[in-house]
Image (cartoon, rainbow, N blue to C red; front, side):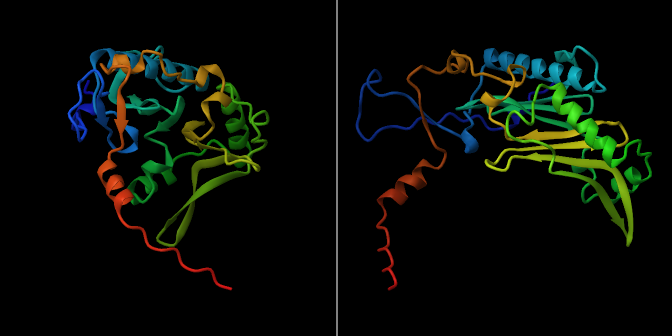
Length: 269
């Protein structure tokens, strides 16, 4: 099993101050990669990340009765992505045809790589094949299934202000002017007062979740979906407690700060 993080160049950049200062007084600084990724890892951190991803994958796989071996163990993982970020772990594992992801302090993603709409979008060959498969669901049964699946992972849509789904749409595929209804339904919950969204794709072939993503903050989710950052998070990465992180584009930001800014345009009367 390969850790796909190894494909990312792991370059530790030390930013030196303009003046020579003793190591005790000058906190070490690390230049981040885009999206707040810390460009380093350790065996201890990798072990923590894999354990966390397996815990989340097992919970969701059991709750949704996914077609995977249970319990999911490390030897079932065929793809592993670990991205240490300043705000906690981000990463994913692939088990059988499913991807399970964590990020932003929570379980963040489920994708069935055989039946997610992403797998056949703009792919005529796969779309033609999917259009011929038996659809065991109708719009009403797909909607009821989506409600049940959300409930099974502990998300109460009404309690967090989402209410009833605002959309349940069956996908269609245009093949040379002939439109085929696809065995796939997109269900969306969306709050009205704040921007909270849950998107769930339901496969009419498997009668199960094929895609799931959302933007609900971790503190509004049940404990089973939360991925709290350990107190020794940075220590597991081999970093000191006084580490300072520098944005990947810090040089551009510094140049911009010191450039003369244009005069504001006068207000029109």
